[in-house]
Image (spheres, rainbow, N blue to C red):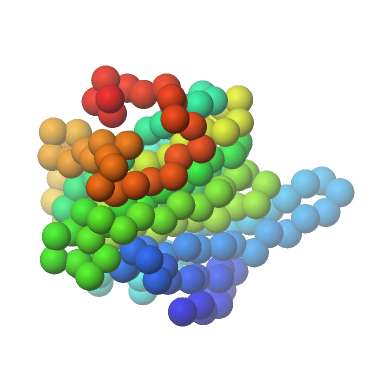
Length: 177
């Protein structure tokens, strides 16, 4: 299902339940482009009413790096790339979900911006095509922030999931190997 809200087109995934692809309106002229990524009232309608987005993170990532698949059962994530080009992948890791183990990918770049909203229990990963990409995470959760020790990690090349990555030998962290 697709809807238009303020400066955004919002499309719900039919592959991974609860994931939304959000495309902002981009205004272009001789100076370049301008777009909005966040309006509180738009996103507060997309996540549970008792949550707010609490903090942002940025990752500067080099070509051929694959980050993820990571997730947790507590936080909502709004992710995008603001510079460079990536393949964004989401994986349903919720055992009680009708789309459990389904995955979906999106090609995102700074010139054609899109954001992906992931509910808790959905794994997040991305692969960098450009020389460098600047990746942005916005997080909403209850209580205090928890980090990697409270997350799950799925193997990037798990044959049971079967993700079609653009590279069979990406650069990986020890955690992702």
